[in-house]
Length: 338
Image (tube, rainbow, N blue to C red; front, side, top):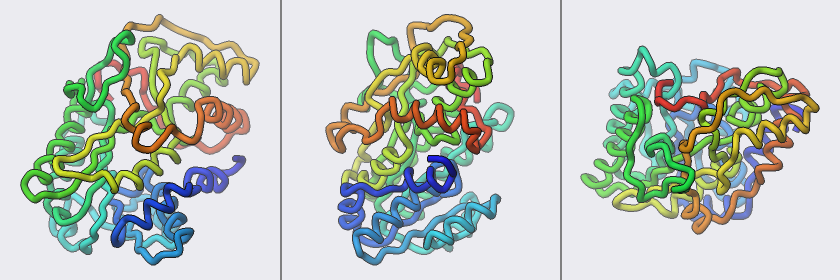
């Protein structure tokens, strides 16, 4: 992958399972909050899978589109865009009905100092959306941050681990889940909640953060010494296939890689690829933000893209000065303040 076009093609390449999934989804598809890091490639995956299936379905992509280039790109892919402020109740009410909704609207970074806006987007808006689309199936993205930090000896949190979110971002994300649970309970809405940990896009992600620091010879903090990650294309695929598992009460699913990855070892792998020493600071603590994706594997199989492939691709992207979003994940944060 040498260009962003190559990357978008790889992220949105449909598998046979994706094609089967869109055949089984009854009716059109709407993505709320499509303009983030993950939404465009998810919309394109759905478009390509529908085309490959040889069926007729509309994909409606909704966001404010403050960056007009994202809307232009989606339009060029044959995806119908709708520009609206989802926090405007009258605008939300005017959106067309749609039998299948993916909810992606969220706010994480710059929460500190503007906590009210994070709560509005992560909790108030899901309540509005749950009511507006109460007759739809809803797949809603959440985050593994709703779990407490886990001791390495415990293993990752499972879907039955009681939430214990650290910090206002994570608390508001749990609020999002509760609003969709409320909607499901009150109106019988079938919902699936995806607790995602670290989707890897070569322009953004924890591997990019680690690899860039090795390449640029900058210190790398080891306090949050372990993590999980999944290729964004695999996470996109699971999202489409999750419609088959929407239920009342909502189905909850951890979405991430199967391995517990060591920041130190990943840094050393980049070091070998770049021929540059990793500058490591501090020591690993005995706990980290970790999720157990065994249920995801049981339902959908293992992710198609391996950790080694993601490291190789990221190393090439960094060394060839590929475009990035310039937004670190802040995976090192342990106090929940983003």
